[in-house]
Image 1: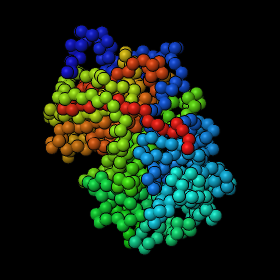
Image 2: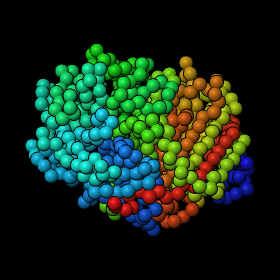
Image 3: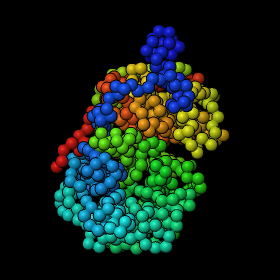
Image 4: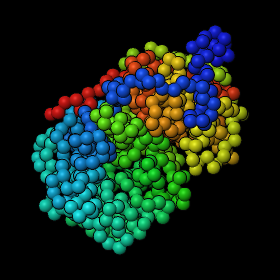
Length: 583
């Protein structure tokens, strides 16, 4: 059972050390009341293999960024990715290629595309896959051409009978799209989407662009997917931002977690989602696809892009979704970059991972996307431990033992015993949630919260990552703040250690439980709050890992209101076979 911190302060010196560090350590570099020690000259090298993830997707070495053209075809999942085969920087980009039957274990193939024509000599950049007529894969991607323009190119599989589609042939009429026309910027025209069919039977794609200085998803049509014509208006544009990278466009049914295939008829009542990458994050709008206007119409237009919805509130960018015809779901991938220095990446010999593939769907009110790790990741679970009916009073914590704390999957339900003491919500916090997470850290007591998990914590608590909630009362509803605070995640200097955060609405009068699922994978801490309403991908490099020290995991409550934990389950996670061999 949980123990009160006041008692532990009298009984256990080590517990006193925990309290002084997690709840007196609330900022860094003079922000807050830190009593934590600093790194010693004996800090082990960041080149330790302990930082390499065990079940997140990454190549054996060197740089990786955007997922590009994921698809399911003839029983095989294909994951293409932006890759520098020669180093740990984002240069000399080719299309890496790996295949899987379960989205967990991956075989590495030769690159699908390399820079060998005038149309892509400066880079084979991000693109998408489309399955034509059910049996013809085609990829459209951005090339950096010999004139330093961004152009769009087509490739087709050389041999469709090859189950792995190892070789791809570039179309003879490449480039199929050029950055020409009024208002176009030739170096801001990239990342074509998966194709979809309109009511006229023509294929459509959208391409991210800067049009007249503003962000836009340009619309193109084709009869055969080889020859394209630009439509005289964008799919959507906004003067609230500049260039949109990595657009994604797909259909969803409110309250239904089944995916929709854009190559088939879209059922009545479906919504559409337009996602774009900007401001180092992936943002999206929910709306309708107006067939008469051939345009996306958002349900809500917000002039301040800081208020646009986000796919993930952490280190997650350039996401790409695809329809998984095997299980009838839509899956989204995202790139998580390193938050150490470029010199650290050189020392490690690798840079970049992909987040766990997530099923993505629209909630029942048709306003917010929900995400959850694919079911297949549960095949790595081992040695389940379970606790029921824990009670966390003010200042309580509970150590979660019996699990590999370096590689774990943890699911916790937090149940509120009262909602009367919720602090008032200030809408201005939505403009800078990370700032509010810094100010309302795990050391700052609130009415309801903070409560949550502390993971990858060193013995002395000099290092720890806190993933936690707070509950606020707004005029219309309750707002839940979820933070993933990295400010004390490592004693290493020169790391990017923010306090990520996001808000979500919750009907606490009907449902008193708030769920948290956290996947811990050495340098990756990936969390899903409120059933996937807020997702936060974080990258951390605790010295304790490289020193091969023991790390700990706790459930805690530092709010004035008691929080019950009706169910806590945790599993050790096996190491997946991720690109260890080439076939």
